[in-house]
Length: 433
Image 1 (cartoon, rainbow, N blue to C red):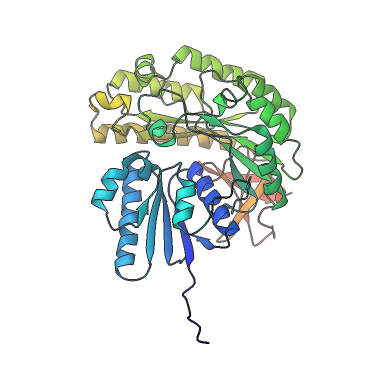
Image 2 (cartoon, rainbow, N blue to C red):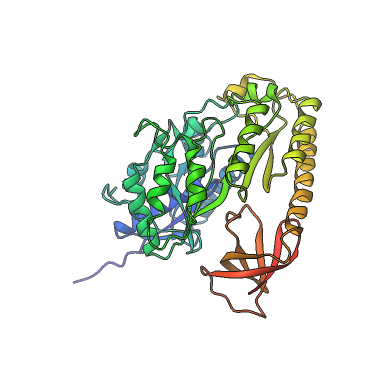
């Protein structure tokens, strides 16, 4: 009997964009593996799935360029099939189908079952938390909700991700337990808006109750909160943070701006006075808390006076962590009806100046840490250093702790106690105690 040799299909998943996309790719990979498919992340494979980002211009450009790169590889015979999914695909599917028509198929953010079918796999409803994590083994993202109900004028996320939908506590606990069983020690809680968690399914803001359930998961040592919206922040979360050592004294709360005029146009539902009071409440409740925020400069109508108000406020508030972005004019958002009237070079100059101020603040705060001891988790070895983080630092975006590898051997994914010997703007140098 003659046998036919078939080239074994290997599916390569490419992830672009934010941590929510990382999570979605991991779920996709878990589903594929459960169907017996060979799947890799950003390695060689003859079938390619590109999980795109469609949030702002730079991200859209990167997504389109990645699709074009793989279309060239398909033309050259290096890959057989290319599928596109994620936010860009959700937002611009008709345009993409027209412009880049040789992609095998496009899928939106809610079409995982259809994508799996196209890849010859079945969608398995019973898989709760069965993911192939792509982050270093010690931490993983835990997406507690999808979508967003906020009306922010500049944001296209509701167009791509739909309305807010919380995941039930019991499912998240199962997922956390499975992650812990695989060696994950740090959970980074993500959603478009953590503060809204539970309103849809429990009829109340239920983030504190979720945290109470997650701290009971054995093996999890750190739980970190990302992307909390300032309006309607559930203050009982601070009580849990103060009481439970597993919850990092850390909060990522994107504030976007502080000029009342700009906040109103952005439809943020708050004012400078309310925001400042809220941050003071955070500091009073948990004095050791690190606050990370993100700001947007160059929003339509932002005058020099508005910018100076923001700049003075950044100097006064002394955030431990801060990122600043230039405004991106996004079609079908509320702000798209406004004139994008701040010149690009002015936007960039403002963003750079804010980051210069933040760099100085960060340097001063870091100098005060020299001689102090911290518990750090080791994420990786890079060159001559082991690279770790304190509870006050999130992966990829925050400060890092560098430990001389020639003096000490440390294992990736493990915790160590270190003493800070030197400090730069965004890095600490330390030795193991």
